[in-house]
Image 1 (cartoon, protein in one colour):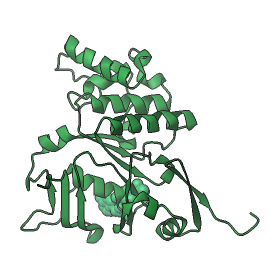
Image 2: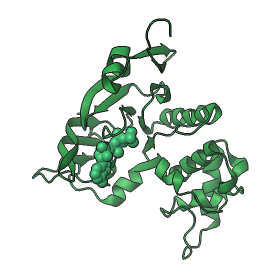
Image 3: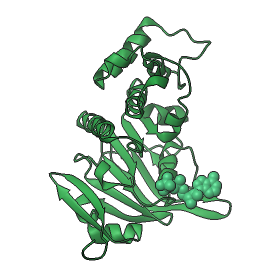
Image 4: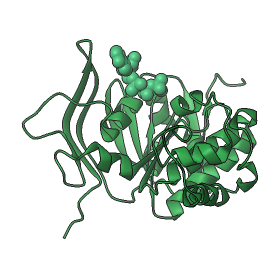
Length: 267
Ligand SMILES: Nc1ncnc2c1ncn2[C@@H]1O[C@H](COP(=O)(O)OP(=O)(O)OP(=O)(O)O)[C@@H](O)[C@H]1O
């Protein structure tokens, strides 16, 4: 018997101000499957993710276009329990002087730190410390997050998502603004989570972010799925040139891919 997919989308259209900003004919994602969404600025990648997390709703159809674990009308609580989301939006909200431990603990309550009216228990703090340890940053537990590097903050935010034990992790452009060390650590975190059997759903502009455990890529262009398939077939110079509209070449090495511009001969 075929397993119920994590998501099934059929004929979903998202409109903003009379303009279709995303249309998805058909898409399915299995439980535990990893995928990378790749495409130019404004293509519709974040909108696609928001369709999954129900932050945007598609136009009404008699049969709802987005089915989550076989449910036509899942509760928001079920969706939130399933996902952890690491995005720049959350990173930009880090404007508070709080120790990493409190930031991570906030993941239990859906807030950045511990809400005023809540009394976090020793067990809650212990959970937070376990997550920091899992990501190899225990030493940051008592450090004010405002004093940390971008890469450290991003790993603290991953720990904050992991505290509620999500089955799927969405990384929306996770390496933006990171130096090579930060990228190394963050890509290592994605590898670790994929090896634990969680789905890694990555949104990126760069094939370099696509960890070897991700086999499938979804190319998004002009508000639609441009291609969906194995990365060996889609991460090619021709395909990337078509996708981004400038001459590009792709190299692969031990399961990792890199993109470079193709200028005229001699440049
Ligand atoms: N609330 C809105 N009102 C009008 N247009 C919107 C709204 N939200 C998104 N859009 C437009 O929808 C299109 C898709 O946006 P989306 O953020 O999904 O693209 P993206 O592929 O994630 O882009 P980027 O790589 O730049 O983050 C863009 O042209 C964007 O300007």
